[in-house]
Image (cartoon, rainbow, N blue to C red; front, side):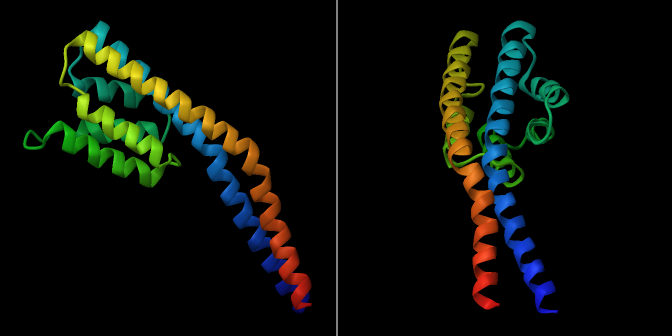
Length: 170
């Protein structure tokens, strides 16, 4: 019975380490999705000249989850004419934080971008989108570095901490 408990505890600690590692590996993927979505947004605004609500809906159809959910939420919330775009954007970013692995730096970048969205002419809007993509590129590189540095460590640390505690208790 004691060995079964030890194996269960070791399994739980290992699982915790793998979940911790997953945060490191999913963050670059979600930042990359955001960059791609902003590039699509740029094309939809500049070339198709779609209204933002339709552009958000188009992006939601072309991107995977969780980015799809983010832009679909934006599209649906824009149907309510009583809400301001900045307020809708901030609510969507908050919801996006709940379902994705982006960090506080990406959240701040998105908040800043949301304050400029729809406020300028096409060329200025393009510059703001490019600036946001550049900031996200920097964060993407940092996320890749963190994944490389800490991803394997998190898996190993989960297993080894479980093993250490099991050995102490046996």
